[in-house]
Length: 121
Image (cartoon, rainbow, N blue to C red; front, side, top):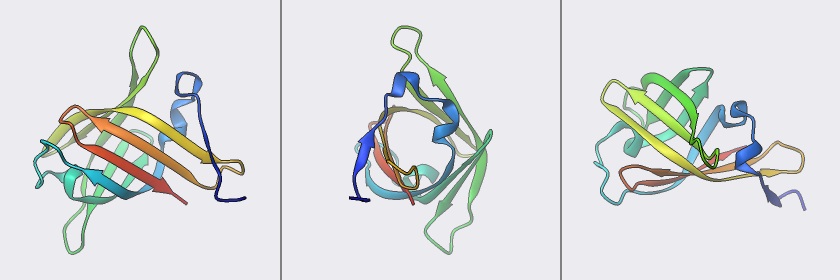
């Protein structure tokens, strides 16, 4: 039963739920540049205001900033990412968490069309 993940209401979610260390579990590039830092990342570290995108080793991680933005009508969360070689934003389409809060799954849809599933355990 510990593998059960529950959907979280994104409109009422505190912004700090998006922070932490996330592993890229799945990615669909669509029209995104396959060489961009976020397309190459295998791990994202979202500390308060600070972003680290870690590529497949032996690549050097890129650091920058991230922030949560919300649209005015539906209060949907977007994550804004600013790295030296890339600036973009992504709509949070789903956040799921285990009942004990130890496991999470975050789905993002980027303005470039890239989709990314992140896991935290």
